[in-house]
Amino acid sequence: MAFPTAVNDQITDSVTQANVKVLGDAPALSMGNLFQATSQALANAAHNATSAQQQTGVTAQAATTMGVTTLYSIDTASTGMATKDILTPPTTKVAGLGS
Image 1 (cartoon, rainbow, N blue to C red):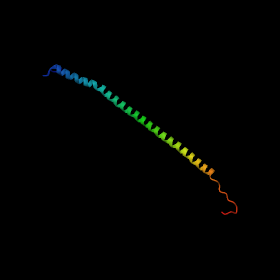
Image 2: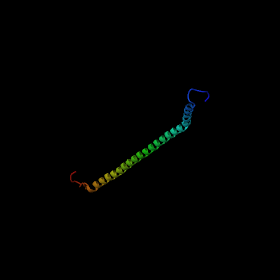
Image 3: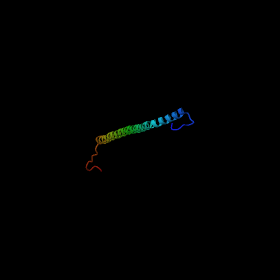
Image 4: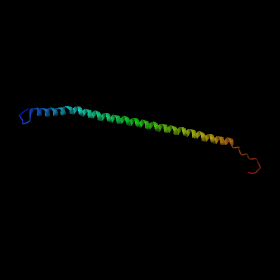
């Protein structure tokens, strides 16, 4: 100690050492907090990317299903019209017999 005090020297040394320990631990704690915040941000980014990929897959599957359904419905409609044309007998007009 630089000058004598009324406090026991062991107590002042203990307080000084505690303060030095806090100051010594500060950089390590700061880096720990930085690493924790960075890892949390990266984890959120990975989660968001995974979620977006899943949603894109669902959307693509829905679009594919609608496309196939449309293709099948067009085929069904054209088949139905063709079948109707085949099964409906043609109307023939005989010359001179009514209209």
